[in-house]
Each structure stands twice: as structure tokens, then as C-alpha cells.
Image (cartoon, rainbow, N blue to C red; front, side, top):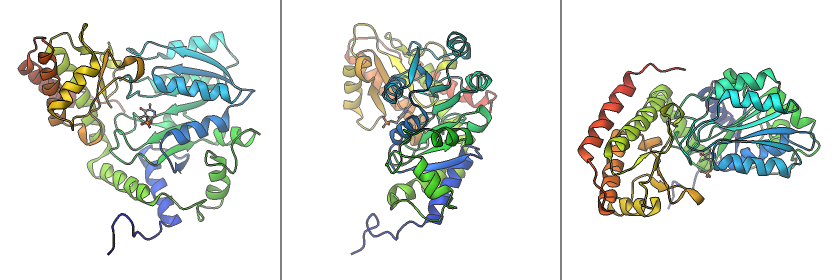
Length: 375
Ligand SMILES: *Cc1c(COP(=O)(O)O)cnc(C)c1O
């Protein structure tokens, strides 16, 4: 008896390379794109360990939990780290990055998270990229939560290491990821004696044994199911059109934000300014006197399939996450989430206006479709 999940022919090098090329097209990049055989934390860690060392002074921008992790890796590599932490209800500005360079002109590496699914904010990468380029620093970007939800343009923005994963807005598998690598970044790795080599974390191994060899021989057996899922995911995005996928996310975010604001009961968008709110996921502040985790549990009791979660760690009491990404970036999911949250708030004794919330959400969805879209 054959099994679709088990009895697959081996994935060829040519097929692997063609999937890399399609991912590169999605990012509009002419840089090398390496597909990495693991969740996005693999290239995120591999890229830092390859390019940072005792001689590095890194500006580490923290707008959520991932920035914290990157700072730990950078310190572990021996880099001097300048942390720039902004409150999670806002975004970092290019001006703040400029000020950090003025204070520490020795900064030669900048790590930034584009959008944070965990905190619901998004950072102005294009403007920050200009500042980073002016100072000639290497620019490392975590675009896992932004790719598919909003433009991610490593070449136009001067990003040297741009890491993506397929499991958020792309609606794809979590077990493979990718990183685009600039010539500058390859040169930094080659000059770094501590860059991982002959290691699962090594990007240089892929450069030397895969890319430089003309992509004919893979380093090891590729994660076949995940690669095929990634190929199918990119194909689906190409069919729908990347612009349209991004527009769905922008609309879902606008609708969730407007709906939650109109719902009442004391619930409110967590990110104060709509311009700082990520299209991939919308975070909400639980009404004072309530517990976000309990509200989410109540909402999920009504409908366990909804993409609702409480914030992680210290945010679990105050933050509700509406993860309207991938196939969940739809009117239907937004409405269902607002409806479930209304039920949870009512159960907690708060007074809410669900019809007003649904009307506001619908209006915001329509208006977001009319708004001019910047590239
Ligand atoms: C989701 C996400 C990742 C990937 O990490 P997981 O926790 O394994 O999903 C990395 N960076 C950011 C900003 C993310 O939102």
C-alpha cells in the first residue's frame, strides 16, 4: 500500500534550486537565497553566528521577544551589543536608529525584526535601511512575520541578511525557512574565523558546497515534504498574486482593529498608532480587571479553531493576539474572532456592542481596499 506522505521520490537538486529561485522572486531579490532545513530560528541564529564576533558592535533593536533573543546570540558570539528597546505598543523610528549611530559610531551591525507577530507592531525598514547604509553597517532583518503580509524588499532596502519563514502570512510549512545573503554578508562570514562550518547552523557550507558548485549537489537529503509544501505555498501565492495576499492581511488588520475599537467593554488595540500595527496579526489590550488568558480560553471554548492566543510570557495577562494570517486573513475569520471575543467579554460581565463591531469591521475592510498602497 503506498502512502502519499511516505513514498515520495527523492527531491532533486534541480527541484530544490527552482524552489529557491521562486522564493527569491517573491522577495524581488538578486541576492543568493539559501533555503534552510529547519524552522526560521535556524537561519536567524546561523546568520548571527556567521557574521558577528568579538570585533562586532551591534545595534540590537528590541520591539518584541525576538529582539531579546538576537541580543543573547550576539553577546554569546562575543559582540558588543547596544540595545535599543522601544515599548511594544509602538514601533522604532529611523530617527532613533540615527541617534544610536551618533552615540555609538562604532556600530557595524544592525539587527531588526520587521513585523512582530508576538506584539503586533511593524517597523519602518525602508527608512531604517537608509540610515544603516549611510553608516555602512551590516543589516540583519527578521522578516518571518512580515513576508506575505506587507512588502519585504531586501535589495531596495539594503538588507544584507533577510530571514523569512513560510508559516505565518505565506500560509506554508514551518519546517523550512530561507535567508537572502548579500555579497557583503558572504564576505563578512568568510573573514570570520568563528563562523560555523561543517555545522547544521552553517550558511558558509551552503555557499561553498551548494551555491559555488552551481547548485548541483545538495549537502544532505532535503526535507522533502516540507520542500514540496513550500513549493505549493509559493505556487498558491503566485496564483492569488502577492499584492492580493498582502491586501487581505492589511484588510484583516484594519477590520480587526476597527471592530475591537467599536466593540466596547474596555477592549482596545494594543498598538496605539495604526501606522505601527502589523498587517500579519492584531494585538488587543484586555479590559482592565480582566485576564487576557482567561478571555481567550472563554472565546476558544466557543470556537476552538479560531486563531486567538494570549500574549506570551509577561504579556499573557494583558494581551490578546488575533493571528489573522495566511488562510485566516479573511472577513469570515475576523468576524468570528470578534464574535467570540464579544461572548467572552459578556461572560466576564462587560457590556459590548457586537453589531457595531461587525459594522465597523466591514467598513474598515472595504476602506482598506480603496486606500492607495505603497510598494
Ligand atoms: C513567528 C516568528 C518567528 C518564528 O518563530 P516561531 O516562534 O517558531 O514561530 C521568528 N520571528 C518572528 C518575528 C516571528 O513572528
